[in-house]
Length: 223
Image 1: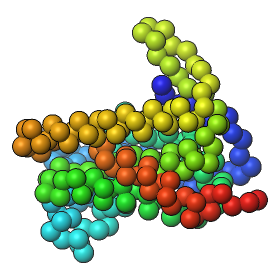
Image 2: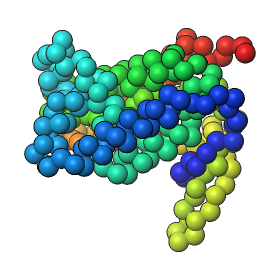
Image 3: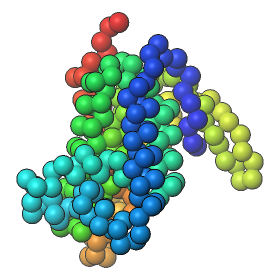
């Protein structure tokens, strides 16, 4: 299932959600303009490299934030931005523009730390907006669990749309990441090597911190 839009109207223009999407797109367009060597250097400088963060936290902590605007490919970017587009607007409305931005960046940084904790000696760069967006999903889940989300569904060669509660689509997202995260830990333990790929524990961490932090930032405030 792939979300298209939520059916909860907002009373404000979600400027920061649009701005975050725009910044991610602009950074990615810069990425695709680089050669492979330049791109590797760019990731080394601005993504979270766990081994470097472990050895030099004072110098590497800014990457906890800069890494949130990097993406490894078109699908990585598009899927993240669609989820932010669908779920970010209502959270921005509930928190307010500036608190929403702080919440978003905090979830992303804490999510990156969760992934770092799983493999502190890894030299594989960790990047993407997924951790921050997972925080938005966690906030959405506890604030709008029954909100309907129009979702694209692929049934073989047949494609259709259905409307499902946010609880269902976000719940599936979280369960899939927990299962995949546990599998990735087991695979790494059995193989005794570094494993790359999706940062499942950043997703899980961002989601959990989103649930924890959103009420503190005023998710349930009265209008």
